[in-house]
Length: 185
Image (cartoon, helix red, strand yellow):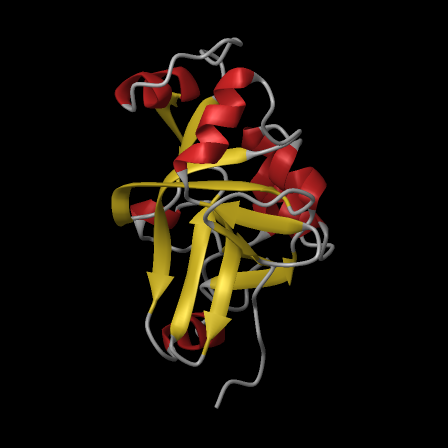
């Protein structure tokens, strides 16, 4: 039985986490149950833009979309799209994660974004991070991750290169001062 629920929290990769999928990653946890966990990495941009995704889907944007980045959300199903956005508006395939944040996987949100009538804030990712039963809890116990409450400002407005330090800063932690060896500062 789980002792904590990490839904709607940030997972902050410790500096020593060696997996390149999660190097200096901040992952927003969309779901955490006894069956496992699912999250989206929010600070690993790809070379893709929203314009490229819309073009691939045959959607013609009526507003500029060439500067909107698409993120590598994680190594699972890297061809599947996820859009994190405020939970004030729901779409065909929306899962409300918290009172304030939702994740949508349906085409209608992309069509609205192309029209300029999508959510006011959003993060587009391809793929997700997944953990089996007990796996995330074990990794947290092994000090691979720090956890803290998710913050919409970090998620949607913080420059991507500052998200890792900003998330850790919510805990009063300066990751640049951490060492990979016990007993060292």
